[in-house]
Image (cartoon, rainbow, N blue to C red; front, side, top):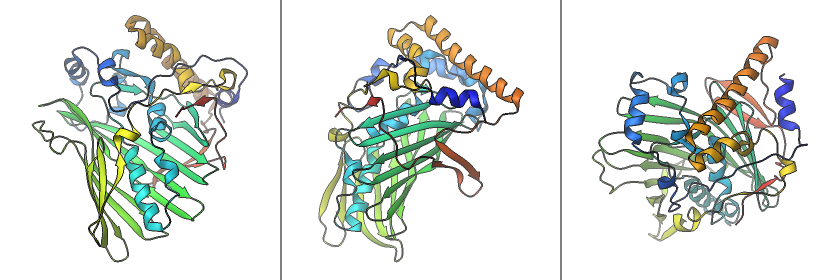
Length: 393
């Protein structure tokens, strides 16, 4: 057990300075604000010595300079997809009168977790033991970086009022393919509607970053959503722009909801995750809008610190606070020093653990790995406590 790391995570006695930035949302202007100059040439210069098919997580040289960073951690981006919303579709998953109504609501919520990616910039790679703890009304969300090599992020979100739980364990693997980078998100969401004893297992799309002929960063690929208790299942396909950049199918979502015991299609899904998505009931032809991006992921408000004295030193907004301020000021020389300081502290802690033959044990999750299931995380607490950081409505 790494006592030093765990003491850092649990101690709350200092008034820490946390720097929070606007969440990624549609129409926020963030893609302009954070875009670095001459970004394509700079990215290609970083990749010039990397062979196609390479796993980029294994290359120390791929540590991005601050010019390429969004001013926030990957933990914050992951968490924002749950707690930063305009229309609270998460809590609405329990409102359906029938199992089919609730399943359709879960499909709509899963689409709402898709957020725009920005070509050429990426969030900070979380350090081992880094946490992110935020509340939004009665929803409390806690994330922890439970492994650094490979990078594994765990999420636990609970709403005691609605009796909902969400568990996520994600391991993102970027691979260089010559003219593109494909980021495969291994792992799954587990959404539990406890009042109905229904458990939903949800996979994630891939992030495709293309350099030619038109630079882009889009979510693509197939995902599944299933509920074993009701035998309902959904298959969705995310699509980006065509090879030449034509945007006819860009950000489209198509699929179906069906009974897995009979393979009978119940609803057809069609739309765009950055606009609207609707389902058509094959029994009567009725069409219903299940997701509106304008209501859900536009004009999102920045979380605020309610009580600085309750912040953990491992909080993302604290760990990367100085670097975030430097990036927002565009002070790139100072930003390089701030980033190096965080990375150097991480290296020192890792060497100290190695000298003591200590194995890192996550503070808030139990972590396991099997060839069949991959990485899985189990929360150590039944309910996530309220947080010192609050996401406003």
